[in-house]
Length: 425
Image 1: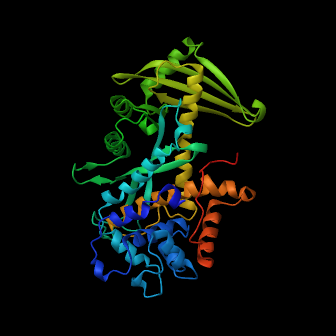
Image 2: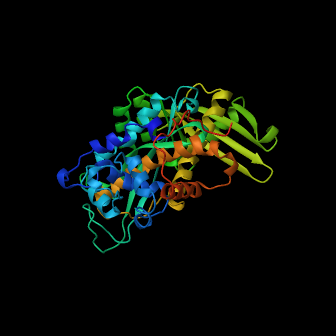
Image 3: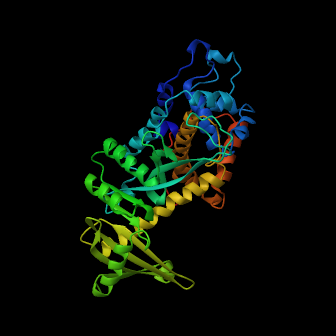
């Protein structure tokens, strides 16, 4: 997968700033970053879990093939090893996090060139970006900006993550913004919405001509976020809640009985009998100084009835467009599912990998690099190759791969990966 999709990944790692005295170094820069990457890919959940087996069996030989520092490197004196997590964490603490954040962006550009996301574009045009915030680390004690613990209180590290929607509902992270509880520069409390505006500035600078549709929860369903999307020429589909925009919600309920023709329904499930979705929508609702559209979708099954509501700046709504926009808005669950997997399935989100602030940011970035590699390897290849093992969990597959890398040498003449296809069809 590395050779087929990201042949330059190790070169990108080696090009990152390296403050070490090279003549005294045993390990390459890529080797150190791969030590962190291996911690996440092996699904051990902690640095110690990876350290326990990093030099057992054939792991050092295979690790060298992955990071580009082979066992024949003269610095190994014939005995290749994998560096310890303390060495990798110390190195990560000395590298500017802004430089490391360029790696997932470069990976995204490669996937855009391969047109991986074309099948997931809304109306065949808009790339769907899903955004949400989460806790990065739950620190046991308070800490200062330089990462030193104060021993007083508890302070979490928060992050705002942006992921692009791919085929089969898979998401690929490429950009994130750290959120400090207190912004020492502005002397104000930071928040998720402020971080979203900073992310928008970065996305607009990085991809000025990319047609984008933002998807987010009710926090973003406000005038500030919608107007920011309007200024950039983007579209948005945000969850709508009554308490978030009470004036718009009241106007929606008043006008709904007068828009009887703005309704449609679809049948879901096998043969269209398992569930039904009824749609209603109202256009040109007042949102601060601007306007927006609201869509209501009621899902009815034999057991439950659920109401979904969305706020969007898509205009000229038709039944077909409303169905597609609603389906796009419901894709917000994809980022929640990913957060859940990262927290509970051995990856280590919310785990404190290191106290240093720079190292913590770099660890999170490499976690996103690991997720991109895993999405492509597992859902673009392994799930199709091993369809008989559909009941196997992703954590089980990851640990099986790591066990295989410890017990068997990878052949040096591996065939090309071929086409990356998602799903079993």
